Amino acid sequence: MRLVIWTFLVFVCSALLLLPLLNLGCKLPTEYSFYPIYSLIALSFLLQLECLSYIKMKGSYARLNSESKENGQLKSSLEKLKKKNSEVLRNQGRLEKKLLKTEGERDSIKDDLKMKTIALKDEKALLLDLKKSLKELKNKKESETHVITLLSLLQENGRFLDFLMDDITSYNDEQVGAASRIVHQGCVKVLKDYFKINPVFNEEEGSEIKISEANKNIEYRFVGEENIANLAQGKLLHKGWKTDMINLPKNIETEAVGFKNIITPAEIEAL
Image (cartoon, rainbow, N blue to C red; front, side):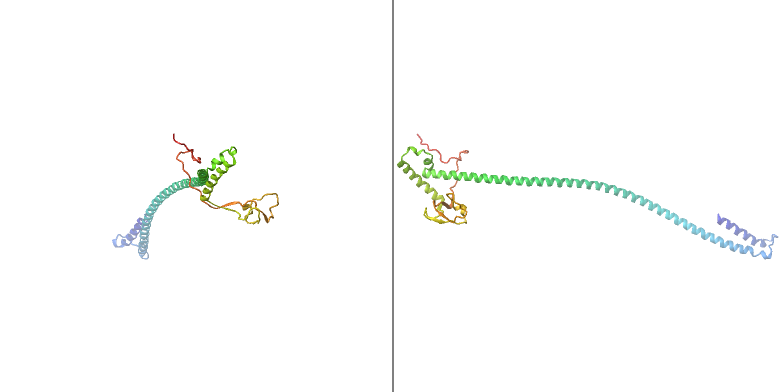
């Protein structure tokens, strides 16, 4: 609008300058003849300023439009970023829930593993006790079997059990002596085959011996009521016996289950 006004004023001033050339009888005073020119110059300068201002304002409008577009793009990018951020936050929340669930499962697994480890230790201890009990039972069974086997050999070679289990009160001394000779020979053979038996002391019975403090409670059995704490010597009543070698006989296995405690089976003569 201002450009239109300034253009109109320039047109008026130009018309006033052209009036003397048209001979319309309208003459301006001499002192006023330069005013239109000055006015035209001033108006032209102002018109140029207005044009420059318009061009600048138009450039500013263009920049504002471009900036508004950029702002719109930035707003849209910001909205997209907000959406992505909200999606990332949702994903983070889901991951945190999953992590908490995983940690809970891990703690549960740890507790189960701890309880299973304790149960395994208890089972191992129980298994060790069972193995120990089985070993003791096996050793006991083996010991019992060795004893039965030894008694069987004594019976087989010297009729040891027949002699001991029989009532010898009805026999005379000659019969008992004859039977004891057989028992003695057979039993000595078995003992010499499986044991190396020697006396604890080689001194004669009835002699005085010095008492050693090293094996005082093992090698000696004191008779009497004397104070044995400071006893240094004593009278040998019995030599004692010890074995330097034990080679127990192999177990006698029986085929019939439940009859492993039989020392010697019964002898039957076919008719």
